[in-house]
Length: 142
Ligand SMILES: C[S@@+](CC[C@H](N)C(=O)[O-])C[C@H]1O[C@@H](n2cnc3c(N)ncnc32)[C@H](O)[C@@H]1O
Image (cartoon, rainbow, N blue to C red):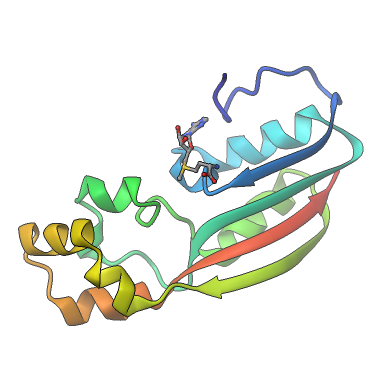
């Protein structure tokens, strides 16, 4: 067990790092990518799937904790996310896939519905924003 901001592994020790929907939850994503770079051996590979945004987070989503633990309000803008990986030192970064979430299904989810009701967020606003939340899969090399 460990934290992705402080990976319990020595430098240049790991062949491959995989991660699915975790980094968006970190309050310091840049550090996470530096840590990934540090522990990978030269030539090692990072393969990540994560939630990123195409539009800046809407104000109405900044407060609800459910939006953070639901992997939405902690998410970075797509370009910033890829930029942070590059800044950490990764090269040959390639996007292996991108997919949208179905906005209708998101707003029908009982937990999402309850949050919208509690925070008095109009359904149309929530659906519009849901379209700018995507899942991205990418790969980069040390
Ligand atoms: C959305 S779940 C994804 C879990 C798994 N990767 C999967 O695909 O089912 C997010 C996970 O990230 C873990 N997590 C969140 N922040 C973390 C951090 N800073 N360091 C390590 N793990 C973290 C949580 O404990 C949780 O297990």
